Amino acid sequence: MFLRNTWYVAAWAKDVGREMTGRVYLNEPVVLYRKENGIAVAVSDRCPHRFAPLHMGQLKGDAIECPYHGLRFDDAGSCVLNPHGDGKIPSGARLRSYPLVERHSLIWIWMGDAAKADASLIPDYGFLSDDTRGTVGGYLAIEANYELLTDNLMDLSHGQFLHASFMQTNDFVNGKHEVLQVGTTVHSNQWVPNGSPQAAYGSDLATGNVDQWWDIRWMPPSVMVLEVGMTPVGQPRDAGKRTLSAHLLTPETETSTHYHFANSRDFRTKDPEMDERIRAWQRGGFAGQDKPMIEAIQKMMGTTDLMSLRPVLLPVDSAAVRARRILAGLVEAENAREPGRKAEAAVA
Ligand code: FES
Ligand SMILES: [Fe+2]
Image (cartoon, rainbow, N blue to C red; front, side, top):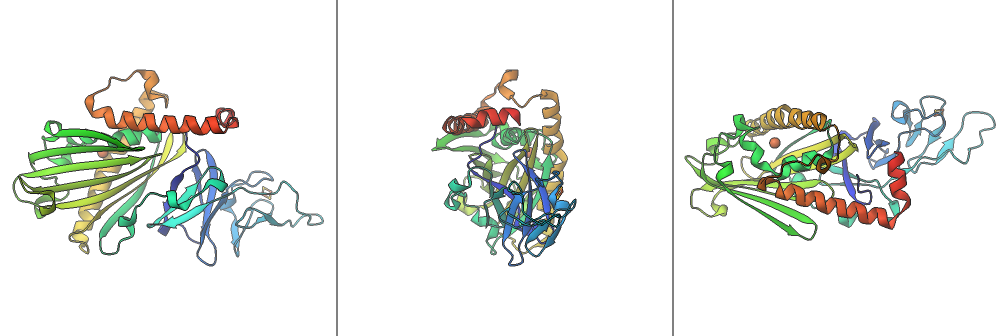
């Protein structure tokens, strides 16, 4: 179940260059590269002749030369050279091209109707490209449906258990949890008073017990911003420190996801030791604990239809369930507007 007329994160901007990158989004193979003028572009990665992956070919200026029989395509998807026969360009020799926008250190892609691609709809991740902040990010390929990752992020109570080695707090489940919906945005706010600080930030931010908050907001289809903060017990939030994190999910297929993430702080900004501490958490927590758990859950479920398994629901699930409902409604509305879509999706 995918929403198509929306922006997804395709890649970190730094990871796209003059080498072609082949990736799959929403079951469609796409090749990304930068033109000689530095502008990033995306076209279908599937040659319309014999379906060779074009990212295995070469760039000739701004055009892609297919590695199999040498048809060349420009960045708009038009075939510009046929080295065979009389050189006539066959009418079907076209690639789909995808709208891309480079913003906030990320490249965003529009997988739906190109005429509807409106860059003003890209959510604000300006903190990622703010040079005054210290930002550490990465990427993980996850073998699971993207909504399972949304569930994981919108219910941070798993931190106390799955991430016990990092969190060093037993206070999570005793905190106050509130879920709010504003338009199609879901807020899941966790308040943990008078607990021990998280190990990732440690005693630099506070000595002794702290009041902590973990406020995450989800925006359709699958992007989140998490604010984690701590302040001396009883003090206002502004007396403490906070970090902002981006959690950006892009479906590769029904059962695999591109996960781009970053943590950004406004303290100890140019401090490699602090960077490494955050990286250790991203490696140990995300790659070492979240990824294997979510992948094992996907296998155990054997389906992407969570609700068909009639899961036991706990109060901590309320934000994730709300996000799932909003997304399902948006997909349904999109399919209703474009009736051919459902049949197409079923065939894919
Ligand atoms: S497969 Fe691309 S030119 Fe033949
Ligand atoms: Fe986690």
